[in-house]
Image 1 (cartoon, rainbow, N blue to C red):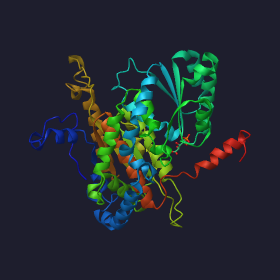
Image 2: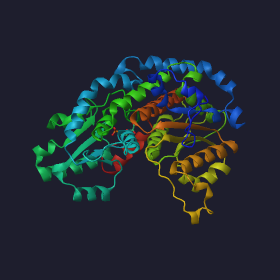
Image 3: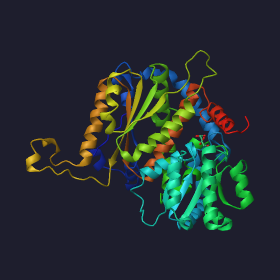
Image 4: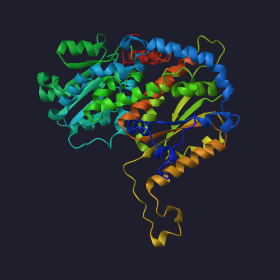
Length: 472
Ligand code: PA5
């Protein structure tokens, strides 16, 4: 699918754009994520790319997978693939989330405790939209994901308990990293405020009926929200797990869901040429099983998307890195997701990307319209050293670096795709989230594995518990 785009250096309107249709159509087209998969195909990148005939040969499987997803998405929150219809099911639950966000608005510091899928989505959107949020009157969110005693200790020394709240998030309600940090914060709040008042500073997001957190919410009458039981952690950013912290931070969560809905509407066809999530899945799957691509490098040319790369890394790895029980003798499923960053990794990883093994698929990301774009002042005296910087802005440099990397990677024969975000806002991020969640489910089903479970990680969790003196 080739999509023409205009980067910062090319702001002129095309004739087609000038003869636009309705203003509404124009607005949604302008906010649409631009997906260019052309460099994943052999006719563009050479032998390491996918032949269009290989996609044609996969059509029966693609249709069958599409049917499975369509059937498994019917039934709202009870459906197997409830994670793909949250833009339809969550709007009903937004009022309590927004009301709680308002209550939380009175605090200065909010510790958002959770790990993996109970943290990464909110963290990624929060980072991406940081500049968009008004800031001054909003509480400051502090994501406590990893165990870091120094970090937490410093926070507790500097925070005023009166102005501090905790949102503890765990679907299972008992994840060790989350529980231990929450217990420390609870005890600190208790000591500073007294037990009764401390309870008014705690919000829980967990399973509606099971687990320690749910039991605690019942026992102590703590305010809580539920994670839909059929929605797994890494697919839960569009539930209360992501929406409550994001609403507190001032993100327009309705636009986030609207963006997700817009991408879902773009992915209803059972033909990969009209369904970008399906096309991406087909291409990544074929590049793994037919071209031995084992790494999937996501390289945004935008600092605000750094944590989006972490969210993707977890979504892709935990969903797809599995033994294919149904295909004995075949290598395990999944391309290892790698997060890189443009332009800095041009000075770090790019050498290896270009000349080492041809075992990678690249996804380059860029933002078309940034609100800030400082001019680069080049004095008369410096002009002879940097004539190419004269009359340029920061984004001209970033865009040139982006295009140069896309081109050299392609000329070296590596398959790559580009995603251009028209701007960084909740609507565009919602599209991106839906695209990746959907593509992950399609890809998992193509491999013949269950993308929604994570059987292998349980063993390590149990062993850690055992090492701490707990039972098996
Ligand atoms: O995607 C997943 O299922 C995991 O990454 C979980 O989100 C993570 O292990 C945290 O689990 P919980 O929300 O139960 O604390």
